[in-house]
Image (cartoon, rainbow, N blue to C red):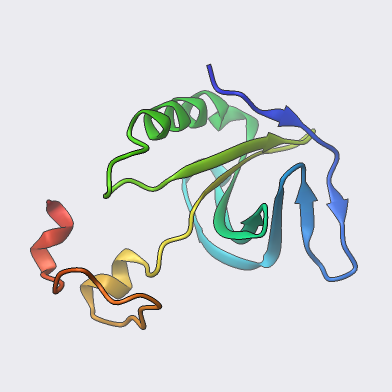
Length: 127
């Protein structure tokens, strides 16, 4: 089963919200998913991460996603899972922060912090 802790949100003067070991900036939205899922830029133990914020109706699906990520943790093409936290309203999942979005990758609109090990090919996304 997925381990997660229940925390009370802390609201910092800098606008950041801290839930247990996860901190996120509600103004730095990276994207959104179905059923009200939001993804924000955040930190887990001072490491940059993507923070998925989920509504209660998505908890079962989110727990399954976390279990799958844990099983695939060593695979180079799968995002790393770091932590799950909860408050009275939401569940938060800290995931590895990607260097670019899929849209940026497809349209060559990216500025990589680390150079790729191999040249990018459009169809390499499917590999």
